[in-house]
Length: 353
Image 1 (cartoon, one colour):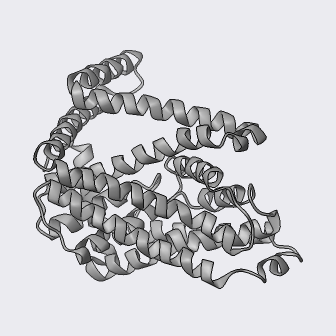
Image 2 (cartoon, rainbow, N blue to C red):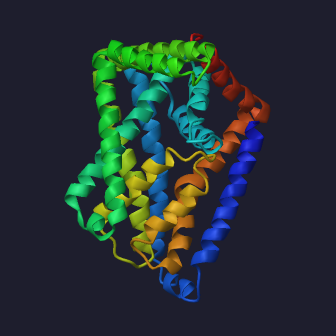
Image 3 (cartoon, rainbow, N blue to C red):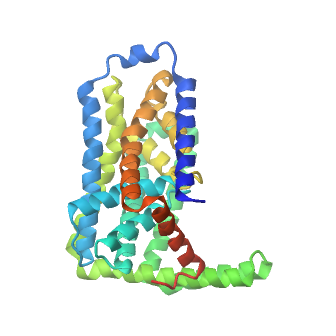
C-alpha cells in the first residue's frame, strides 16, 4: 500500500472517530461546562506541546553526540516531526524509524549510527513509560481500586514490561542466550510445519543480525559517550513528563480538579496500549481510548471535546508539520521508497547496510 493511501486511511479513520466521539458525548450541558475554560491554562497546554518538541529534539542531539556525531537543532526538530508522520501512516506506529534514519543519513550520519540513535531513543521512551505504571500504582492506588478492570490491565502491563526488561538486560549482557532462545523457537515452529523452511531461515538470519547490531549499538553509547547518553536519558524523562502533563493541564483548564498521578497512570496505560493497535497511527483506538481516560476525571459530556483537543495538540499538529516536511522533501513517491527499502531489507534477512 502506498504512503499516500495509508495517510488517506489515517485521515478518514481520524475524522470518523472524531465525529463519532463528539456525537456520542456532546449534550446540552457540554458548552455550558466549557464556557468557563481558562484561556491561560489552554495556552499553557499548547506551550507544553512546543516544549515537548524541543526536548525531543535536544534528546536526539545528545544521542548523536554520544555516537560521535553533531546535529543541528533544525535537523533534529525535523526528525521529531517526521517521526509523527511515519508513525501515523503505519500499523503499531512502526514507520517513524525508517523516516528518522533517512533524515539522519541525509544529514551526514551513517546508516548504522542512525539506526542506533533511533532505536535507543525508542527504548528510552518505552523504559520510562514502563517506570511510570508501577510508580503510579504504588503512589496512587485509589484509581485501580475504584476501577477493577484497570487493575487487571495494569498488572498485565507490569508483567509484560518486566519480561521485556529482563530480555533487554540479557540481550545486552548475554546476546548469545537470546539467539539460542530464538533459534530454538524457530526450530520448534519448523517441526510443527507452521511456516516454510525458507521463511524461517530468513527470519533466523534477520533476527540474529539485528541482535548483533543492537548489541553493538548499545555498546557504542555506553563506551564512548556515557555523559551525553546520561544527559539524553534526563531529557527523555523531561520529554515524557512534559508530554503526559498536557492531559491534566487541559482538565484543569476546563475547570475540573485532577489528581496528577492518577491521570499519569491512566494515560500511561493508554499510551502502552496504542503501541499494539494495528490501525495506521493507532487511529480510532487513540481517540476512543482518550475519551475513556478523560471520562475517568471529567463528566462524559465534555470528555469527547477534551479528548479531541488533546489529540489535536499532542499528535495532529506534529503529524501535520511532519507531512509538510515529507511531501516537500521527498514527495509521496520518495516516501514510498523510504518504506519499501526498509521492507526489502527485512525480507532479504537484514544483512544489507
